Image 1 (cartoon, rainbow, N blue to C red):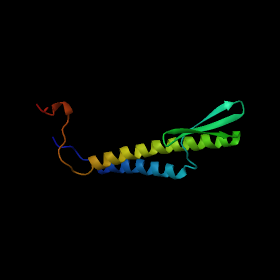
Image 2 (image 1 turned 60 degrees about the horizontal axis):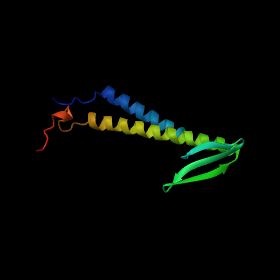
Image 3 (image 1 turned 90 degrees about the vertical axis):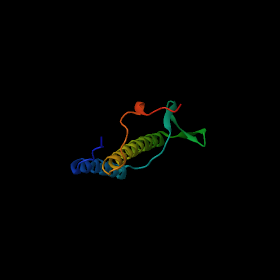
Image 4 (image 1 turned 180 degrees about the horizontal axis):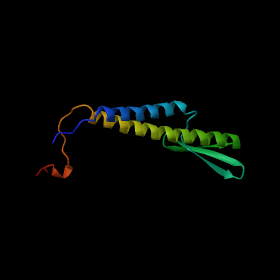
Length: 112
C-alpha cells in the first residue's frame, strides 16, 4: 500500500503552524539555561551546567526575576524548536513521494 501524500490543504495547515512557531520565536527576549532557587530568604542563586560541572552564581532579587524569565523563554524556545522539527518531518515525509515504507516493524524478517 502506498503512503498517501498530504493534500494542499494539509500542507498549508502545517506551514501555518510552522510560521506561528517562527513568529513566537521572534517574540522571545533574553534566554538562558539553568534554574533559579532561593538560597536563604532574600538571597537567590542561579545554577547551570558548564562542561559537565555545576556552576552556581549568587543573584540579587531583581536578577533572580530576570533570570527566571530568561529561563522560561529558553524552555519555550526548546519546545518551539521541537514542534518545528516535528512539523518539518511530517511535511518532508508526507508531502514528497518516497519509497514504500513497512507498516509494522514486527513484520521485518529476523536474521538467523
